[in-house]
Amino acid sequence: MSILVTGAAGFIGMHLSKKLLDLGYKVVGFDNVNDYYETQLKKDRLEILNKYDHFTFYQEDLANLNAVNNCFEQENIDIVINLAAQAGVRYSLENPHAYIDSNIQGFTNILEASRHSKVKHLIYASSSSVYGANVKMPFSTSDAVDHPVSLYAATKKSNELMAHTYSHLYNIPTTGLRFFTVYGPYGRPDMAYFSFTNRIVNGETINVFNNGDMQRDFTYIDDIVDGIVKLLDQAPQPDENWDKENPDPSSSYAPYKVYNIGNNQPVRLMDFIATLEKHLGKEADKEYLPMQPGDVQATYADIDDLNKATGFQPTTTIDEGLKKFVEWYKEYYKVNIEV
Image (cartoon, rainbow, N blue to C red; front, top):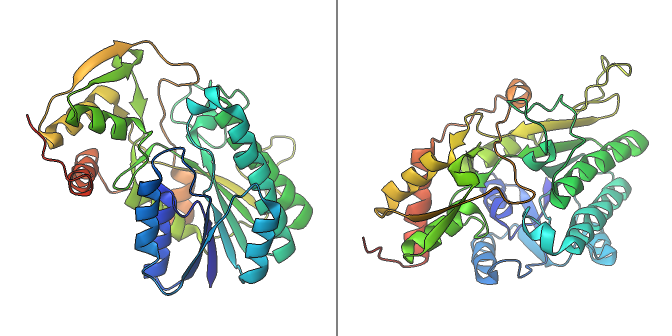
């Protein structure tokens, strides 16, 4: 079976591709290797994947329709896992057009190519950010998500709507995954835990927003990958019990499904920082600041649907996950932390 992973040079994309390759799948990677953050990290991720004979890589941009079509024409794609996107809530305040090009135009190209290639299953990355102004916890995929608070969130909500349209019109089975704060080795340097580590190591002050009154459903990368792999052969079927008078946003009369994929155990930001400090062996100098525009105070995933469908259940604690991240960080950056 041939699986296309877009965003293969990214954090989740690399770990997922490696797992699929280890399981014996043929993996086709697709990534533009842009400079949103350090490209060397992306190249080092790709170096890991390029060691496999059954990995093929296209360094192209999803917004380039010809490049996307060429990839689908050259490779016999059975399943698409679309992880490529312009990520980051805060960057969307500075460069909104990047999100339209990648997350809207790029996803349109994937949908069109999947339609014409008659792929068996399209799995795509949504985000916990779609919950926006929602405050009812835990976040449930059965709740309406009509009040995004960042353009990034709006593009991810748009992806879910676009996917449903193609499931309805062309009978393409689509599964959307709302990721909740993924962390781990080879992670994204723009994520808070990574930037905290950089600054603590360098003796710099870390910015703690909303005066530390934040909660996140931190989810370790291996648990995320396990959840995605469990979904490969779980292409959604039309829900015969779907009620048009009381529509459930997470399912449909079409072959469409949306799941939360998170840890289901939110952690206070200050506890997270304390655990990071423990494993680094160094205390952070903290500056407490107000909430940033586009940010939310808390995330908490209801994962019951995904658990029922696949048995998904995260097993990595924050203590275990951050220990592994810090060990990788020290080795990768060759740092000797001075207390």
